[in-house]
Amino acid sequence: MSAKKTFFATNLKYLRLQKNMEQLELAKLLGRKSSSSISEWEKGKYTPKSGLLSDIAAIFNVSLTALMEEDLRASESKGVDYHLPQKDLMMISERLSENNYNKWLDFGQDLLSHQSKED
Image 1 (cartoon, rainbow, N blue to C red):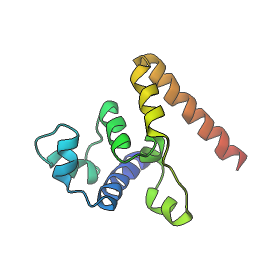
Image 2 (image 1 turned 90 degrees about the horizontal axis):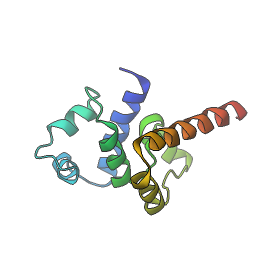
Image 3 (image 1 turned 180 degrees about the vertical axis):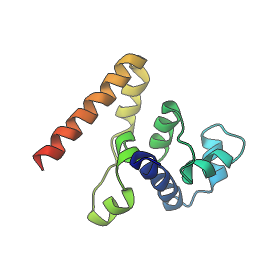
């Protein structure tokens, strides 16, 4: 299991429980009929496709990068706020072509990589 997959699984369960949300409730928000996928994601067996990942990030009002690559449990104890202006992010992500959306994500990854080298 990769580190990113581990963070996603851990973060998904953490965020869901922080909102006192049942797996079935999250499943229905994502257009699923049962909670089995949510359970498997939280166990780290699978990771949803990118479209669903974006939907999950939007539901919990966190960045996709934070959802996938940060331990949000640790971030909370440090007082880090990963909440972003959801309306703006959703507008951008909905209007970008798939190619430009991927470039946007890659650019964000490059910025994070550069930032970590500065720290």
